[in-house]
Image 1 (cartoon, rainbow, N blue to C red):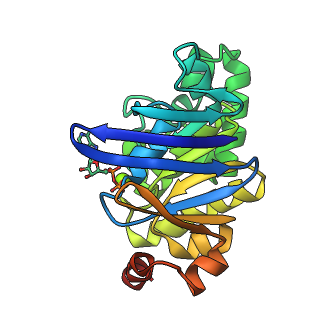
Image 2 (image 1 turned 180 degrees about the vertical axis):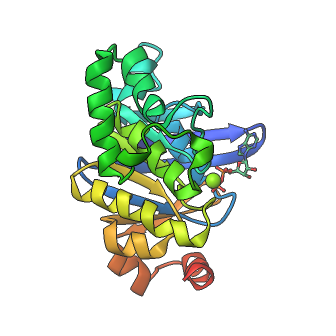
Length: 240
Ligand code: ADP
Ligand code: MG
């Protein structure tokens, strides 16, 4: 579903992504971890062109999205993105946040979009909050709405960039639970997270990034019990 081929990116003279080769298969859950500043956000943002790359190819669902010929809006419709800061529209209700893109971009019939929206809110446990406004919700609830909003476009892939790191500790579990359910439903997912419990339990593969390079990637059991690099060992000592 996603394939990075020799991807390089610079911010001025900072070589932030260095020869990245990485694949995410259909239905696979890949967790990306690594120290702060290692390029995790930049990497995941390139997968739906929130960041441009300088060289290489990024294939998403059979299309090279860095080709000038590609319709990036179509690519983005297939790739949901959940940010650390939920970025809900404050002046729209929960349900309106979820139905906006399907109605405006996918041209879904508004009544149908609302029915589908309520069903998605049910999935994340928030149907009863459909008429509330974001400011009336806790951080964990807002993030669950953001996930429902991402799913409303019926994406083939979901990308997550530290979806729980802005949350109070007691709200992390409810968001991880929604992500776990989504993984179990077969969604292809690429998640930047420091929640190593989630990685251990849900990920098919863990990718460790350092200074813009994929230093190692392995199934969680292998990565956590026997990291190959000294840097990954140090990283795990800090986060576990
Ligand atoms: P991570 O998500 O792993 O913390 P990022 O991908 O955010 O890392 O950043 C990787 C490196 O790129 C950092 O050194 C960061 O300061 C730098 N960086 C990120 N975004 C920009 C930008 N828009 N302009 C210049 N440098 C950036
Ligand atoms: Mg980041």
